[in-house]
Length: 544
Image (cartoon, rainbow, N blue to C red; front, side):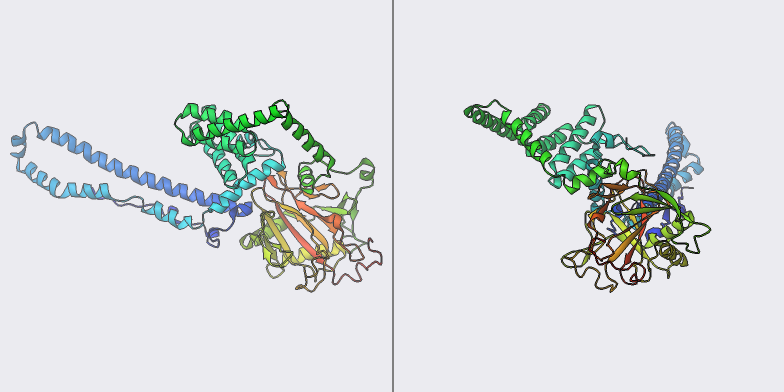
């Protein structure tokens, strides 16, 4: 009657086959495409958890039925114990219950219903993101905040441009971001996110994080930025909540001492409090305005759509056309749509050049091969990962699928350049805040061995396919010339990295802006010098 067999549906024990090829610590945050697998993993775990809950509920229901039955039986029997046991059947059943059925109940109560869920969780945990992934995703949010000039409140309320799924950040989320910034000695972002956590606490959000803890981080991060008076204010707020806080009491005395010392120094120099700081700020802003805008600022401005240096006169010289590359037989009757994106360097875009079927096939081939994108160390030449390149890439050849050869041939037909000496088709998927900061595609004079192993010369040109639209961010920008090219699914852009003389065109220095909202897939073909001798003859002038 009380036998109970724990059975969990087979579904909760099934693992996603797509995760079996992944190893722990696989830099999930560097590829949105691979992160999608984690959603299905989590869905499996929720299913397994609900199966466990149902099993527990079934078990408790059986125990409840038994308890209710025993309660009514005992109540009747204890009214007349001798009369009740005078019936030999009742005496037998009492012996049976105490000797057998209560033992069965004990087994039921002690039965472990967690086996299925725990084993599933244990197996899948080896494919979970690591601390590095969590930190990488957090730093990506901070990077997006700076690049696109977003307030902490804008991010915390999920009010991002182009976002379909609005998500709110909790106090714990904001606090975690602040802590990660703090551990990275980034007191600026520590202040921003601890302030947001405090704001949400003051608005009544329930949290395991208390105001005292947040104020402790907040006051110290502000002090580290040189604002002692504000740090003192927050320390006083903290002590109102916890007057025995040892560190805050020590900080209170120290901050008051430093402010008094500063006040006396100002009086001795005959200056009003704060005058020196104001003057210094003016001097600082003056110096900044007189300096040339650094590349990093140009890059971030272009990512936001600011600082584009295309004048109306130059714009009027850019055209769109139907293009057949000097009457190439494949395109005489069906020329492709080509439009000028920029004049110097000359950047051209081909529209509807990659079909939906081709895009999906390339992504399908690339996804299981994706690995963290690397850069070539300019000193050692060794391939290594870098914090300024957040993406995963894969290399595809015609051996993987004949369609790759078709795509390569299309590039050759439209550019007129030899593909036999080009690098394989590289497919890249960007991660959380995915980017690739300013870089050159070609090898400079101080990197004579950049492509020596290939034996095909320098990278003469770059062909870049956009395989997805991006809701917000993700532009390709050229900081030196103020150009920005935005992703458009199915299109491709092309430019020469070298002049006909073989000298590098330094105006082609470019970057991939962080993806703010969306999933960015691209593929590119780096075309080399060898084999182009008759297709793009060398010039005797360095700048030609």
